[in-house]
Length: 358
Image (tube, rainbow, N blue to C red; front, side, top):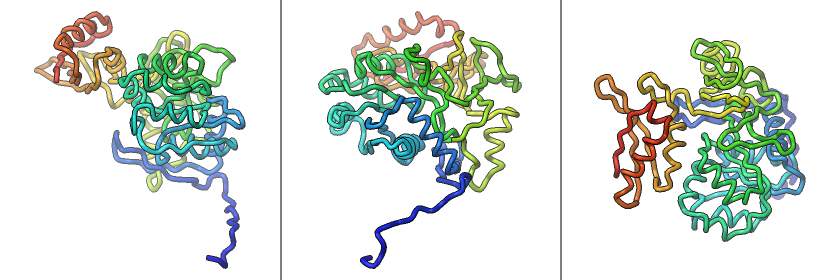
């Protein structure tokens, strides 16, 4: 080793050479080894980190995702380093040694940005605000979120308790396949509104399209359909390694001329996008197609619920959504939850609800 040089000359690569291959989780099918290119992916990770989070030189960026997933690749490693930033590598869980782990880190490292998952937020929300408020979070400018649809209660807690209403909540939507953030409240006009629990605005060069089951693009606002993208962008995956035909069949053949994300979405009356969840994770109840994310958003706003599982039961021709709820509250729980749900117009019109208390 003493005779070896201390210098390592970087290898020159072509722009379309593979930078890395990353397998999806396989939660919705056989895992796919998605291959990303050197120049396109790196460029897209860099510009999204810079403009979505308004990253400035000298700031400290705290993406707490596992480095092995695409979020860790794009916003722990490639994006921040592309912009010459200081990035945080986080290991452990949000609740070890206690539920103040994230916020102690924010105070100690004086982070300007934190980027985490709705699952972690909901877990910390149940632990109470004292674990947050005991630490100084005044350096935070942007509160990022990624992973699955962010429900209203978690958004409000993030905004009010963590950010003291002084930091933008940036609820982002993207995928392993897209390489980086594709829909997000920021960038936007200075001071533009941020609405709860929706990514809202497409990033530069991204042209979202909502498509019906017949492959027809839905025009105008206040519509719901399959979320597709009708454009190309630098960070998009180039292939499924070793199976390019599967790549075409999965993402481009379902709706000809579009990239199909696999998710459903709503474009509201203002033209903003809200993600409803996976298209293959939908409950069909009496002709109504209900995303589990939509149901979860209504249920978890009940502060006395700790855990929830949503499934579907069938009795003869009747289909019923079964909510299995874990809680540790007094006996009035069942009656209170049932009353609250009956008074939700959305549920009374579309769902027959069975509650199993455990």
